[in-house]
Length: 99
Image (cartoon, rainbow, N blue to C red; front, side, top):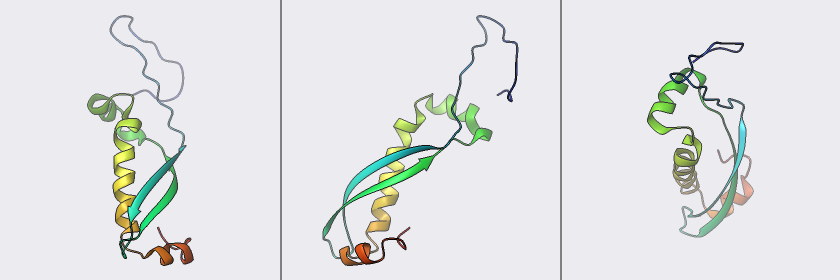
């Protein structure tokens, strides 16, 4: 991994893989059961960005499309575990507190 700036690459042996490390918004829609087992439709907006320190390892293990492969399942799992702690009425009244 090279820092910002101009760098020389050896043709045929090295090629640049460019990652956007800015925060990207995403919208996740989910249907889940609350504490009272009532089904709740919820939309969650998340901001994600890769950790620059582990980008080489991230590329080796997951490739360039890591966000489409890994993040949706992690976000869904976390969202459902948080929703399961509250009743449907609590989700409406304590909207800003549910995190």
